[in-house]
Length: 271
Image (cartoon, rainbow, N blue to C red; front, top):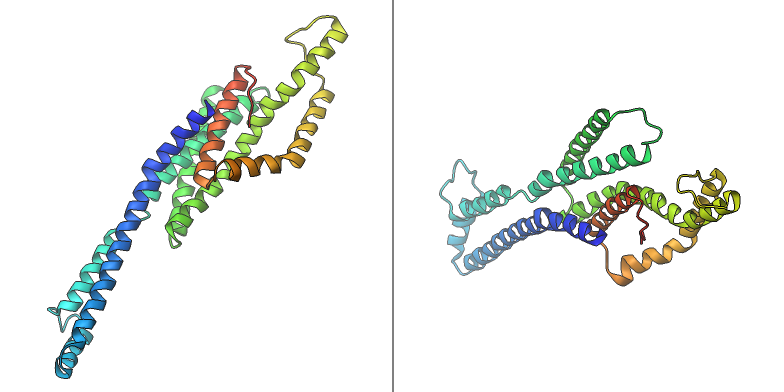
């Protein structure tokens, strides 16, 4: 189920951002190649002409635009440059990247508000949705501004860089869902044993001692600290090469599924 959700998220990213951006980038590169080819062919052809004709044409090219409007070379080069200006390779990022940020921020904030803080928060459902809406709007505006700032770099690098920043939040969300589910998986049998030793029966609603929660929490962190690197290496490079876009999709998809499973009391593997 986590794979299906991650696939849906990545399919949207691939369909709405990666492929259209790649096409625009290819179109721009083709125009630049045509301009370079035209320039080379023009000057090669110019070398075959007499010295007098060469001087005449070069003088025409060097004249100001207002003084020489009908020069073939200058008009053709201007046409190429106008075509390049018409292609905004970052228009796709500016349109869809803020939407993805808004949705991801809304989902992550909803996880924390409705699951992480549901036992300590005094906010009602309407207030929670107001907070989610505000966080989503802020994420949209900030992401839109970031795309405009970093668009001077190469398109692929810009896309990977922004999604790598997104991964800070999706990784935090996954860590939260990981703890919410895996701690319960680990402590469940132990808590049942404690309950039997104390009361002679298993009570599904009996509280788990804080010392047990703390001990298993520390054990989970220690396990991740010493063994997590090997798991990350295996999943991130040996099984498949993960880019920021696929990593973002996998983390967000896994977070959604694990927290939903936790909400319904279903033990699942976060790996």
